[in-house]
Amino acid sequence: MKLSGVLPALVTPFDQQGNIDFKAFEKHLTNLRAAGVSGWVPCGSSGEYNLMSDDERDEVLKFVKAFAKPGETLIAGTNAPHTKGVIANTKRAKQIGYDTVLLATPFYTKPSQTELIKHFNTVLDAVDVNIVLYSYPAKDGVELEWELLDALADHPRVIGIKESSGVLQRAIGIATRYKDRIQLVSGSDDIALDFMFWGADSWICGPANCMAKAVCDLDRTYRSGDMTKARSQMATLYAAMNILESGKFVQKLKYGCELLGTSVGECRAPLGPLTDDEKSAFRAAMEPIINWK
Image 1 (cartoon, rainbow, N blue to C red):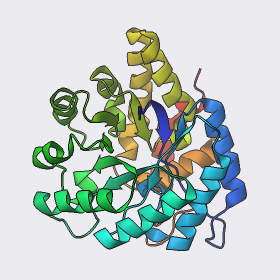
Image 2: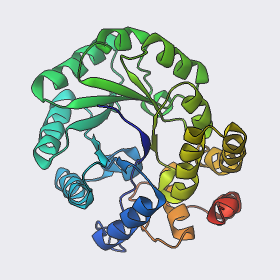
Image 3: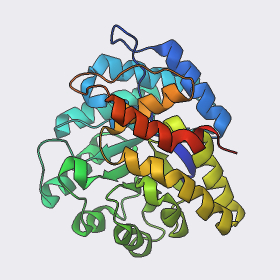
Image 4: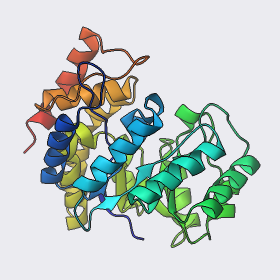
């Protein structure tokens, strides 16, 4: 399975009562499709999966699956704090119609590399799905190290890794060490152009929620071979992406959607709202993206 293009790591819209707002969700997905995304990644960390019940996560997966058109890539986030939970989530996603899942290390537990190798192999043995690994040590406290990648690189259903360490050397190492074995997927948004240069043909992108036209244009520009224009576009995107990475990532994604005219509600507690100063700084950085040409 070849991954390509911009795959938004979707936010989950909530209404004023804190319930999933499917009307807003449909509008949001419609706008993203118009911008040129190539598929959908629901129930990842940008989607506040860890703040939803299993039933709510299933509702989101079913909704996005029903919205998707043939040819659009579907990747379900099915993470949980323990292996049994990941298997249960992945089995339900498979039944809904997802053949590929995105999996980080189980959160909170901080397993060793040996434990993680067993974890991922246990999931692969239990459910016939493709896995895109997700390495985000700043959030999870554990990096998916070479030991683990070496152990999984030749499994036919470990197809890629979303690399979100923010360390370009890691991306280069993955691209060269696992060429034609594990696909490098861009997950460090503020250096996405560097990832493209090193062979990342896909971008699982949280900022696509509020910057879809801009990030899809960058992807298209790079593919066209116009590196001068691509660098200019990346420079324009950089300020807003850098502020996103400074904290309150999901809150800023949702506020960015509001700035573009698509309200997706607030985040669930314990995530709180942005301060007026945080809104002002992000709004200023978003200005050239809102007026993208």
